[in-house]
Length: 478
Image 1 (cartoon, rainbow, N blue to C red):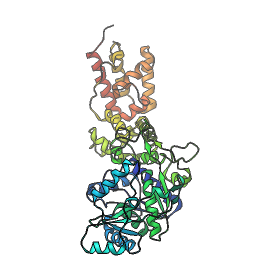
Image 2 (cartoon, one colour):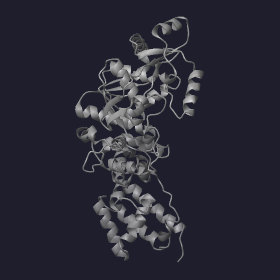
Image 3 (cartoon, rainbow, N blue to C red):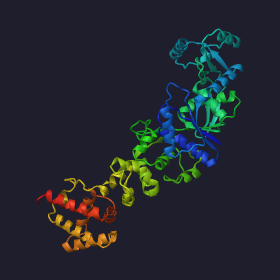
């Protein structure tokens, strides 16, 4: 098996292209073979070298690995021209001397008749001798492929048997008047040259496939197995927009999604592993993937679902896997140069909060309080605490209790807090909730006693003292 992913470098690698690459990789992995990356840059005016780099970087970050390439389609232009010449020689293509104005006039006439222009319905190709005479005289011409006069039929492993009737087929240009090959000629020439056995691509290419089938047959080359993937829609059941997910893969990286989570989510856009499974390792996906389980209907890309999957990966990944992806987000919140002496504290904080985060950005924000000398407290969030006139004194006593602990563990911290609550005649929650606010500026979070230990004794005492001072300065009289 030899599969290929062949993006055009006229835009970023986006959700649809990434899913196509993933399915090519999963099929290659599940059945064995090679995966080729080919950049289809024959449209030189629209191709962008920066896009080529972005496509390769995006695939690498996502974890899609190819065996050969990346190859540039433009490097095979001379071979493509030679193929066109061979088709001309065999009478399977012909020179077209019609001007753009003539073609446009014929197209308008067909539209008036409620028809679609088919070239040979309006223009009879010149004889081979006449073509050669006019070409030798210097007349400008393009080269058209002569489509068969019978239906084109092929088997698609997503759509089943696909038939294009003869009347829906038209001769098409394979070599422009400037001698440059068109996409249709180049893609088939390269698929033949690279011995591609399976072509997986989006169903926006479905209308191109009969042209390609005609070329494969004319070249006497074996027909690859085709699979046209259904559209990806947004939650509104419309084509993806930038708002609903039609953005570059690297933007998902910058939004704080893990590559493994995005790979998992994209793999599920049209493929069902069975048993309602949603979270899988790469190895499990490779073992379970079959083309028979690719759905023919459109898939919906749900950002909320992606966030949920990402949260599961944040929770389930090892710290060694997680920390390299988290580092840019730590730098954004001012925690980029903590020093080796703070590594253990950082990892404890990350480990404690990652089960509550949906993105890497969320997680980075959650660990900020562990490394700031003081925190800002919201007056409205603290309204309940500001009404409790005895609370600053109680927090001061808690500071002393924590300071005198011989060992600073979740168990000793909890015992100290509960003992103080009993001593001053309040429920433990009356101290737990303000302590959480003091240490994190938040009303909710992980287990308080784990949080205190992860924060460390020195920082915990400092935040408690600062919060007590804040309450004294901003009381609400009952």
